[in-house]
Amino acid sequence: MLAVGEGAVLSHGSAVALWGFLRPLSGPIHVTVAAGVPRSPRPGIRVHRSRTLAARDITRRHGIAVTTPARTIDDVRGEIEPYLFRHTLPRPLVNHRVHGHRVDFYWPAQRLAVETDSWDYHRGPVAFEDDHERDLELRVHGITTRRYTGDQLEAAPEAVCADLRRALGLAS
Image (cartoon, rainbow, N blue to C red; front, side, top):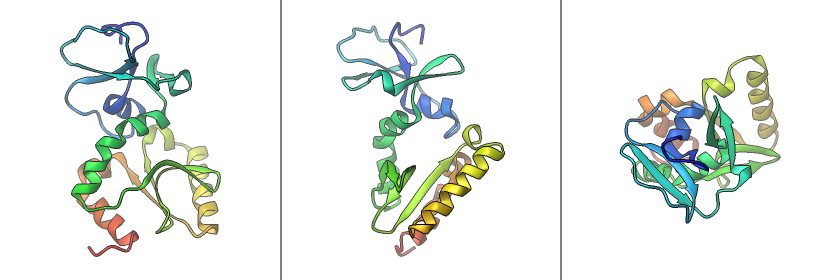
């Protein structure tokens, strides 16, 4: 962040790794700055310019300025869609509110919510209980929740997609 300068925040795939959604990816570090702010190119750093980055989209994690989890998911949506297309999955709503709960992915026609859980956010008894309470509340409304870990998404994407295809009622 120091190399890019004031106002830069970790974003996209780099924020995904910092938040613990998935393992760190090889390649450049992704940062976002406000549109119109000049930045010199730096080796190993991919600078994104945004007209919509607001204070509510920025927080700190381990002392590093980073996009919030919600903004991070929005930023990588374009990276998720090719994954869905490759596996012939319909496009979900991303980071969507369902009966008062924000879920990572939601297919309204099939009433299916998917949560991608990381150890950083879901360790300990409070997070465990909160996750299961939310799942129960969604089931009351006829919504099924599937949970996948970052390791499952990365190491076994075919198995995750096969499970999703079954849950969505698609031919496997």
